[in-house]
Length: 512
Ligand SMILES: [Zn+2]
Image (cartoon, rainbow, N blue to C red; front, top):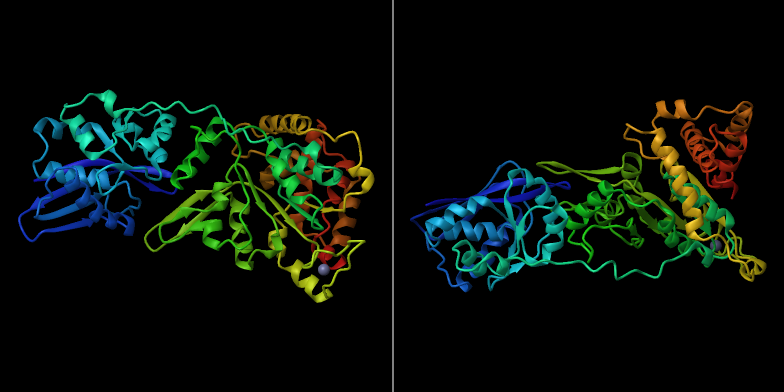
């Protein structure tokens, strides 16, 4: 007998519909899964056999073939257990004709435990969203209820395979297979970090304000204890709120990585701070079952790389693609997947390997060669993608002892939002979202040089050995500073301010 069950699968961050065909024929007892299943799907066999037996059904001792169609697309994940088990029950005649007929109204997703209970699985949200067009009711594990609610697809959440069959056979009603979860209103409201708690470091704060306003990448260089991580952790607090579309996009990525929190939709911009020992795959994504990496988990948010120069050279090099294109493309033998990865990079590093270069109290024990090697780990092409570099000096006692606190995050955010609003109007109808992402054409249109600026830029180009790409970045950043001041045109003073943030450029590296 043949049965056909609807489920889903994932490519990149989008889902697609898959039909699970189960055929049972006389012959040697085997269970074969075909249609490009990966290891995770092939392992489902053992779970399905045990779950069917432990739910009080018979596992047919015949030749069972499971085909996942479309056959040319790779299938990964553990959620195929449930549709395969139902297909076997239907094809072996253990469901009534009425129940078999009902199967076509549903989309089934769920991993099965050996006792037949439904376990949560990854990627439920993108699969529900893309399968909405088929107007089916989804069957999902109870632990995935939040994703069901985000997707606005009708769904039920049975606890076990047995309970699901009882529902299909109309032995129990819908109330028993449907839970309604009301998410707690952001109870984990973390103690809000505020810029006013960081003493001194006015230049670094200003650099972060410009970065937030125009989507620019920042590198902070300073002695240990000068507040680099304190500043970075407060950076998300001055970013604009997520739009509905952005929130859905990152929630899908977190769903695929099985990292959904307690709230329905992610409402805060992500802040990811991987350790410098991270592997390339974990940073960028990929692996034998491609999964999004840290750069995609930071999509629409912040990627903070502390001890920037300690990251492996290959990790730093693979960062170039997402920094340039806002996405990561992973090629494998049979297919190519891409994950969005448009984030703001906030990097921090010490001035030298021992961390004391420039410290008035402790001598630096590094040789000039060690210092040079340390700095040259950040390659030119990578530096080219960092718009603002700022040196942090040790906090002066007078700054630390100041009674009046600095500006609050709310005050800074106010200016950021206003600058973003100017950009929203400027780029309306295009795919550009902020000044940092302007195309060459937009650069020409929106960033005309003020009169007399030619000489300044030319002098800077000679003095710092700036590349043409660096000049473009200077203009984009100056555009953001002008927006922060609500200035229609870029002025010479805006260009001069940008120049302060370039101490690590080419020639600058040797000068330091
Ligand atoms: Zn040193």
